[in-house]
Amino acid sequence: MLFRSGDTARRAGLAYDWFSTDPVEEQRGLARAELILAIQEREYERFAALAPGRVMLVVHAREAVALPPPDGTHLLFVGASNVENADGLRRFLDTAWPRVLAAHPDARLRVAGGVSHAIADRSWPSVDWLGVVDDLTPVYAAASLVINPIAIGTGLKIKTVDAL
Image 1 (tube, helix red, strand yellow):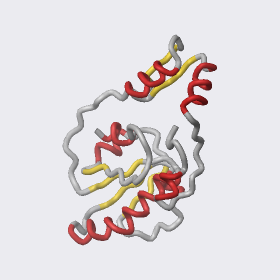
Image 2 (tube, one colour):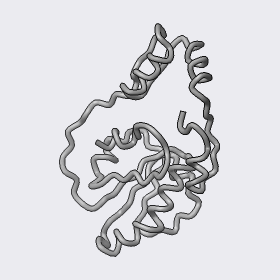
Image 3 (cartoon, rainbow, N blue to C red):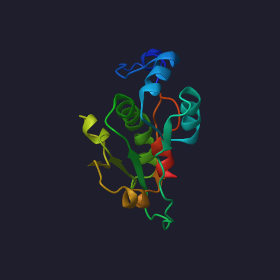
Image 4 (cartoon, helix red, strand yellow):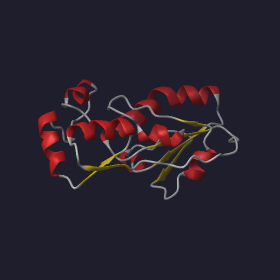
């Protein structure tokens, strides 16, 4: 569940188009599941409390890979095609990116994932729109800095864990 209600999205000026439920209905839904997948330990513990006895797995595990230090001034944003990612990226491009380029004219921002297709205006300078990438490891390896300018949401941001 991303939000308990659409209030957070509306306060941020975004359309709320996600599914939300209350804790009672969430528990009822989990009780019907044969297998429950969690993406982090805290979520696993919450689901275990709501649906005792159900088979559960934590599924987001990424092997840490030692990478050499990047050379250059490449920034990276990775995100799915959703309104929160698109809004965060647009705000970054409108407000922060001009200041980054003023201080570091050779900087480049690489945008990976479906969010590349969610942004119609591609007039910002020094931005590479990669689209969906099968293997992000070399993309992360080339990045000097990974950004996550998302204003709303709850819980652990997998894109932040992947970047680390």
